[in-house]
Length: 430
Image (cartoon, rainbow, N blue to C red; front, top):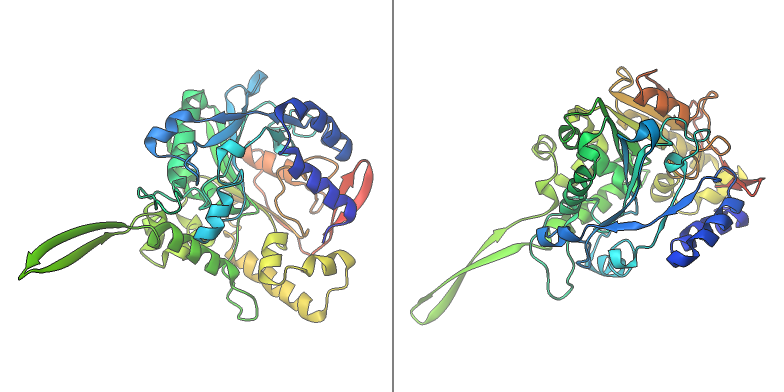
């Protein structure tokens, strides 16, 4: 659980997205007062990709997809960072219908978005990327940008077109200058760390003029646990995503003929959906839902990528060990049984990561703080969570620019409570 003040902060961030455009300046100032290190936070309007509708690249509700673009400046004019926003997955029709009535399923409900952290314009807080072109891609398909199903069930009017959305947005950005990029990063947070890696090589192939293209996974390296004492939650989640995006929506082609006044129906079934975009090098070896685990596809990625995550990521810990576990971590009073579960989870997580023998191709920053994602609130000098006096800001910047290749893993084998500065006061956040 979070402290009261931290809850207020998170609520402020969420509520800030639900304000009208005319109130953006007021909310921006309020947010700056709340977060130490967010002095350069600012709102960016959405860009609707209108021509995507003709290509069938639409959100769950059929509306066109959207992103937020802030142009680079100075020597960053030809540098691009694209972040695929997180937001879990919708696993069944009811879940997706509910989602389609929010900004996670409809661009009509998306409002200006707050840019901070790795999107900050502050050279002091964000020295390597402050003047880059920054793109925040809104997540509105519920299937981690993997669905590509033509048929739409008229009973729900749900569209599963995430892969088309990714293609349409990248195509739109290429026309706006991305094709001439000198340096570029494709990144994804939480659920969309997966497509950031899945499409990493494809993204690189679209930028033949670029000097440096790399990918970044932020808190999206979820694992398939082997220990029966731990809950294998993510395999169930990914099975549902595959089932919903493949098996529940299928094309039926009917052939009929009449024999002796009795109508006989023959049915041909054509499966469509997420498996079309999953790498065949993986699906040829295992069930498609297992190919949503990054550990099973990372070996075939040729483009360098970097993983940022806590060994005790709060979303992963809550899902596998228990949803109320944050209270015990914050109070530092976990039971022996809980501590044993933490240690086992950490061991399995580290084994699932890419090997550390080639940090140029597979960099990493793995800390032990119990929180989820790092590229926004925690990407500043005050709130950064260090490992051996190193921060993600420094380690990733050095890795990206080929100054130093690092694979950093914190040695703590139990989770640490994480701290956030609110209005200049240190607050605990579990």
